[in-house]
Length: 77
Image 1 (cartoon, helix red, strand yellow):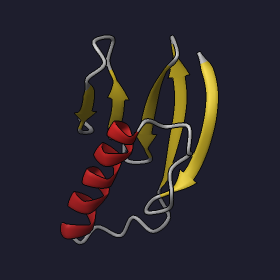
Image 2 (cartoon, helix red, strand yellow):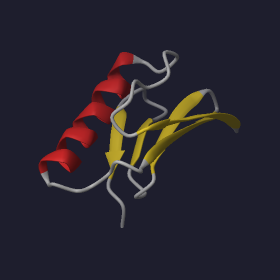
Image 3 (cartoon, rainbow, N blue to C red):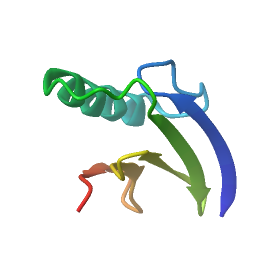
Image 4 (cartoon, rainbow, N blue to C red):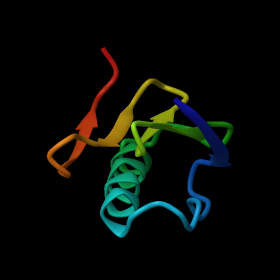
């Protein structure tokens, strides 16, 4: 596992992330904003496992690229 970086909800994600995962992150942020949740203090954390990014939001939402190359979004339990 390789440590990555953190950024604030709604801010620009790291440039290293693929456009497909950035689009999924924006989708998650749009849903949370539409629901009226105050996520102003939330942050994303990206780590890399086997070279693939795993982005986790402070609420536990995961956005990642699986082994097949598809982007998946997992809501918190």
